[in-house]
Length: 359
Image 1 (cartoon, rainbow, N blue to C red):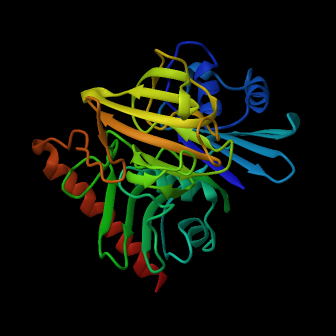
Image 2 (cartoon, rainbow, N blue to C red; image 1 turned 30 degrees about the vertical axis):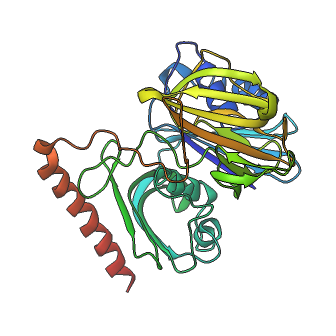
């Protein structure tokens, strides 16, 4: 099962192009995206979609697709199988909202740990995306780590209908002792008012394993020692690849040993490269956002198997993607910190009250 959640941002003036970009950019194939949009037309005013509206896509066995658009208190649900419409439902009854505390201990991985206590895949992905700039949950979780979040849940009567905003999120490493805690105030900030959002995401893939790191290595095809300019992430062919940062596509096509390659130019002289792709979804000169779908994992060029070769350069100098340290975006202004701290204390006290009622 695959779950995708994304915040909707209006980025174009055409009626349905922004939603099309969001669906295809999330990795959904074009026939299903086209059918979903045609089903919604006449029911949803695409021009009035706003930041905070959300999309949830669930792919189940036997090509069963469940699409859910949450807009305010309304939920639009489309169910498809092999692009054939199986059901369409507009749930326009007003929903009640409740702030609830979700917490647990990691066993095996974050996905199973959170779903095993009754939460949906949507919440797992959203929680992981919050920390996407600092924690790579594919490789950095350990048994005994803990998570906690204060999340708005939507109900229709007593029946759960979906998730709203995550107002507080915390992740603590058992072995490292490091604790990440963030609060929503138009964006996610830590206790000192620093923005969690950074220039680059930690990884261009959602799920993978690292097979080759930055530095000298014995090349498996050329049979000689040479410098490895990036990091190799093993993943199945077709796995969606995402831009780690906002920028402009400098190159998209075939380039020697890289096979199918995308080069993106970022601010401050940075450049990222994505090689051995099976397909490319962007064009030279195109502007891309952080986390935008740009292509799929492949094994083109000098490659022994399906993987993504990822590089980072600054002013032409090669950098190690795994040790790259970047400054966060602008923090909360000093003159607003007192109000922010008051807001944080309210969230923390509310979480404590919820926990006490469970005892």
